[in-house]
Image 1 (tube, one colour):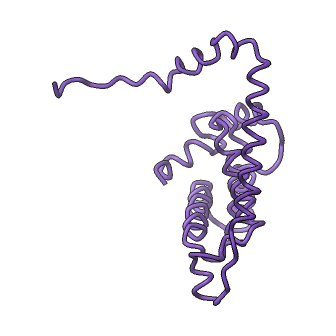
Image 2 (cartoon, rainbow, N blue to C red; image 1 turned 180 degrees about the vertical axis):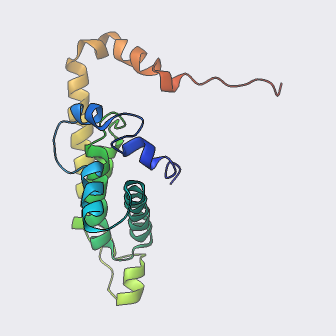
Length: 183
């Protein structure tokens, strides 16, 4: 929600980074936000900026529905499609956490996440299920991801020498200065 005002500037064809540059860094030509915007414009009479506002409002609404447990399977299905569309065409803004978010949304779609503390349970009177087996599957998945990532890092020369850690810590986004005016 904090970048909703800048959503159009970040993801539009004529945004801060041109669509041609953004799509050249993308690994696939699948669903992305400009294509989704073009689809909305084609079927409605709204402007391009309004279509981006509709997309961001849908993303936020579906996220709130998933958090509250309202229509969890439908919300997670459409939310994962929107999430993939947002991060598929914007590889320059992606740094890996979005992949874990996609995995978590997929698990929200597959597993009965609406079974414990949700509005679906209260509205539709569904009985609860034991989340233990589903939690174990997620834990196993995360263990596989982290173990395979660790093996790749062990095999990499930059990780063994410490250069990768040095480069990661010296990126521009980590150069945070703390003002000491209050002392």
